[in-house]
Amino acid sequence: MIALLLFGGFALFLILGVPVAFGIALASLAAILYQGYPMALFGQRLFTSVDSFPLMAIPLFMLAGSLMGHGGITRRIINLALALVGNIRGSLAHVVTTSGVIMGGVSGSGVADVAALGSVMIPEMKKRNYDAGFSAALVASSGSLALILPPSIAIIIYGVSNQASIGDLFLAAIAPGIVIGLGFALYSYFYAVRHGYPTEGRVSGAEKWKRFKEASWALMMPVIIIGGIRMGVFTPTEGGAVVAVYAFLIGLFVYKEFTLADIPKICMEAAIATAVIAAIIAATSLFGWLLTNARLPQTIAGAILGLTENKILLLLLINLMLLVVGMFLDSGPAILLMTPILAPVAAHLGVDPVQFGLVMVINLTIGLLTPPVGTALYLASSISGVPVMKLSRAMLPFIGIMLAVLALVTYVPGFTSWALSN
Image 1 (cartoon, rainbow, N blue to C red):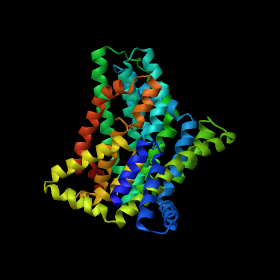
Image 2: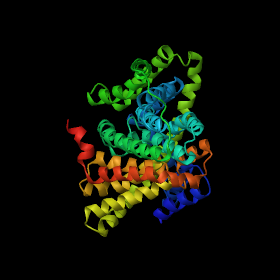
Image 3: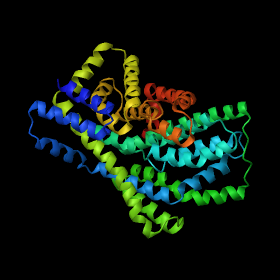
Image 4: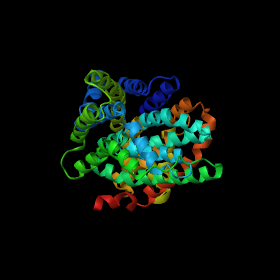
């Protein structure tokens, strides 16, 4: 009955169009009333779930991303990418991919990067007669890499929910993120050759150096984050504070794209984005507590393990479950809901928590690109004017590349663990 109230109630509220956080909270409230728990438990669990030092990293990285977004980082990164790949067939497509990888190491938000890339690059690609579906699919896929590359907000949420090292997760995520980006670039090259898309022209060495210097302050952000955490200079939470101060100083005194008068608006933007995530974390933590209290994760894990002893098939089943969940839920709530259920199964199979975290995050990144609730898909469709069904078909090659890398992460542990041993 508890499972029916929780999952059935959540599904009903989702169908009715209730915001995810409120749908989860209301389903949890129904379960609390059914179990006869005191109503005070509802507020207590919501509050204590966000009373966490590691979770402070989220508003800090959100603030850093907002500061860099207003500080002209997108334009400088795109200019640098154009200088690096301007002489390759289908240059603008490679600019999108290169910018997606670089911006992914700065913002931590896939949806924000899709919006930033799409607003700048899709109109330019249309002017040069790039196929609209291909352009929008490339922007959505490349922008979504921010969900995988550090400082990914999704990775921070997983690290907190499964008590895994966020520093190790950040480091292990670099290889899969870059390989996916290279896969996008390779496909874009062959697509550009087949359709005769132009190059943008070679840029002189002096101009490349100039653009690199302009973008170098932004490029230092992922270096500061990963280097500082791995060297033990600061924790991921403290790293968020360091990067936020860094972004403030660079945006105000180096790039000079905003003034002190703009700071309240920038902080409010970051606060609103953080509040949405915090509401989801609070609601799903209560949901997860009720699940655990009813021993449902253990029951579900036992049922999954009872299907077969074959590790390959079980990992395939986990991936299929996550792909389906990702089609209906954004990464944050999906991670918080599925980690208590699937992490014990992964641990039983001998899968390292860091490796399993990347399996979850890549699956849910694919969910951003698939209907019926693919946020990046709908955003790219809105910016480009390409209908969702047409865009979904154009997305298939990019999803195929991500699935291939997902298979590597799932079945080749060394693909993610090599960096942790050095």
